[in-house]
Image (cartoon, rainbow, N blue to C red; front, side, top):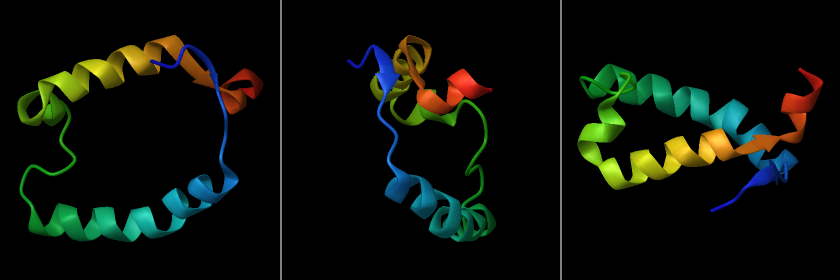
Length: 66
């Protein structure tokens, strides 16, 4: 489990901002319930718990400047 500062990746950041938006729009149109809050706990509770702890124990360099 990562604790502390996360190392930013410019390549992943750009990819998430471009291709991800189109994919999410398609999935939202096709899959009912896609993108709704709290569905991660239903589908995979172990991963949802890990992600919740990870989000609270680590931070990005960009969070410092906000």
